Image (cartoon, rainbow, N blue to C red; front, side, top):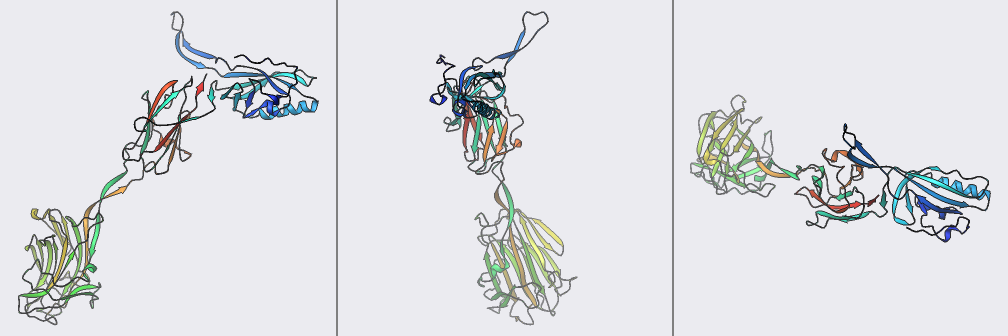
Length: 516
């Protein structure tokens, strides 16, 4: 490049124009900061020197070439300073020292304003004393011999539906890009692949958005029977005449309240007369009705005050079409004696267990006394378990495996025309029904590596990774190929990948062109 001749004896103000090789140091041109300062020439900006790494092999001619390394660069700026007085002369050098105190400053020359070097002043040429018109030299040490474009370029992905960056790189030396990704939802990982098949990966590609799990859900309780009608037919014992009265309220003397119990019968002159209530079980949290697998805790009080009292209490689990899946019945039909029976039934009225007990308020004789009364029914597929007196009685009945419980029926009855006073079971009530649907399939969100709004910043040159501005080395995979993930002179492609289930993040790529 040809430059204008500079007359070193001229005292033209620097503010009139800047020489072609005028130097901006850390953002300021010295000509604009120091009166009488003027750049005369600059050396060291041209060809970069390099060192060859080779080895000698025995008596073989020449050497074996291994690599080349570019050396650091020394830029020498020759300048002129003319001042009107000694004080202005001292003031000018004080200002120069102040400007050059900055280390690793950005250095731009007026004939190439779109590129900069990074350097630190290291020495100067001794000037002659006794004059306010001098010529001197400034040495700037550039550990990094390359120069960079002032403008940082930003690109977005345009190929492959916006997943691949296309970069026409105009620099003459490789450049390491900077990538920023803003998440628009949960995401497990982000990976970058360049056209040389080099990969950078952050996060965990095996991470999932959520997981399926099962839980038990309470669907109904005894209180749900409170306001139901009493006129349901008895599906376990169809021969019972129903239509009597039931009530849900405090039961005198009970350790557990309120309770559900029978208050009257509507008919007489029949085998059994009583009352029933039928509850349709609500849907689960998924909106699905019915339970193929369930657990139901029950508490029942059934005890006599005198011999000869009679009565029935039963809890049945039904399908949508009122078929009996299973249930528990407590009954005393002996109008003279003291014995009663607890019965377990499955698949209709098939009784699988019938056990005699004596329903006094005696813990040795009666599990259904006021202090206890705890029992349960568990159905898992074709296996049904009944709890009684500390023991589970288990039965496998293939016919009920796929039967789905959608209703619960409670019933009570008195024998024949017997009255509801001294001939009725003194304490005959249901104190708890807590129905759980088992194994309800649910889905839950799993905390992911990246969440909505997170900003991931990847600096390829320094191998640093930042999440929301905080450096986090744990994000990068150990096998990340940092050294070889760069833009080469010419055409480049870089693709990004994220979790398949995640919303596409906004990814931008930034770089500066690097020149020899």
